[in-house]
Image 1: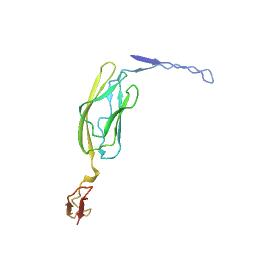
Image 2: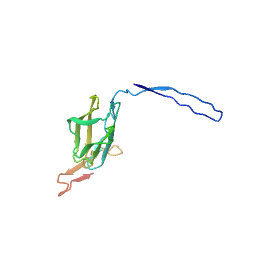
Image 3: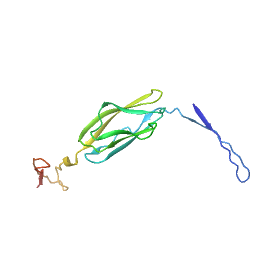
Length: 154
């Protein structure tokens, strides 16, 4: 379906113009973004997922896998024009899932995503000093709540 807009304005000298610009409302359905950013355990995570080119209303569901624990898919617009993946991640790891958008005309679009939730307590351990010298790291194992982990760098 094409829609045409025509406008006419009267300027100071009664100059009138008409503009006819065709544009299409039948854009191919799309779901953005194509990838999600990494998140951090215990830190707020929020990504908007705009859905374009669909007939409203639109539903977005997880059809395989699972979003990271602590995150939920929330509708951000009454007609489903965008959703938000939000929350506070409660588990670290790599989470793979597929989202599927479905509109009023039963048009579907699916996209697979992977989200890495990083535990800041398990940051990579350096193996060399800024000057290039070797670093020896000793780690004492224990529970973070009862027996803290001790790291000694020499």
